[in-house]
Amino acid sequence: MENYLSKGNFSPFDVSVFLNEVLPSTILSDLKKVGVGVKSVTIHSLFSSKNPKVGLLIHEAISRFLCDLEDIKYPYEEHKFLYPKGDGVNVAEWGNGYGVISPHSDDLYETIDTDLLSLTVSKDETKSSTIIYDIDQVLNNFPADYLTDLLNMEFNYISGKNVNGRVITKKRTFREYKNNMSYYNIDLRKEAELGNRMYPVDKGNNYLVDELRIALEKTAPLYSKGKTGTFIVISNREVLHGRGQLPKEDNTERLLFRSKGSKYLTPQVEKELTLENQY
Image (cartoon, rainbow, N blue to C red; front, side):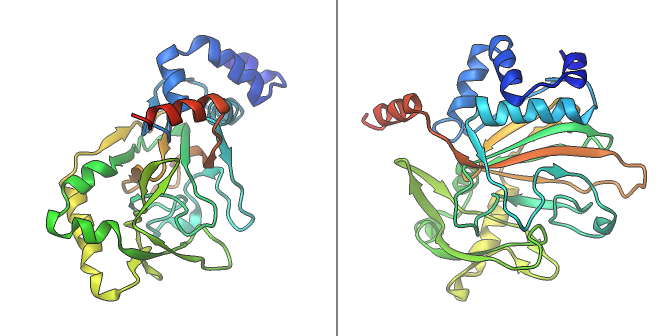
């Protein structure tokens, strides 16, 4: 298949039809339900070719047609291709930098909710895994005395280095509801210039962000391998994701494809979701 993809003029839809036939039915079912009952799905060894055309085609096919992810392209950021850039050698909390990226959910400052996030590894000589945390497990490790206050508290969320030429902020409640389900707004990144990417509207509650970091340290993470052919899709506000330090070497080769945006609910999924929430 990979040789055909690298030579032919295929569309992501063409590839999705093929994958729909070869992927196990349990995986196909879970891919459809990420964001509406399933928190994350990871698939290893989807392909072995480091040809970016192959990886991008498969990434788009799964993200759009098997996960129902409506990718949002904002004009002030380059979000599709992630790779270490020369000006990112000493930069943390940035997808194209070399430094640590603290656990977070994407785009909490935007007007449109990012329901899903998908990542596909085209190549990664650094073998750097994506680290993911189940937010429910993090909150289980949060001090019970403060939890009720936290869930109803308002925070400001601020854009970072990924947004060019502007800074975007949005005020929202820590816990929100959508499609009769609860979701959370957590961004534990702390940038050198902007500081915390989330901070309480009432600055007297700043200690709660520190408590979140402590709770995170007590939570066991999962790892999505930094290896060619790895695909992961997560429910963006049920799962946090991050990454460790990349080696600062000139010959480091790392390329990931990313999609992020709204969950397109087909009529069938909407019907299933409604029935599930009646009981």
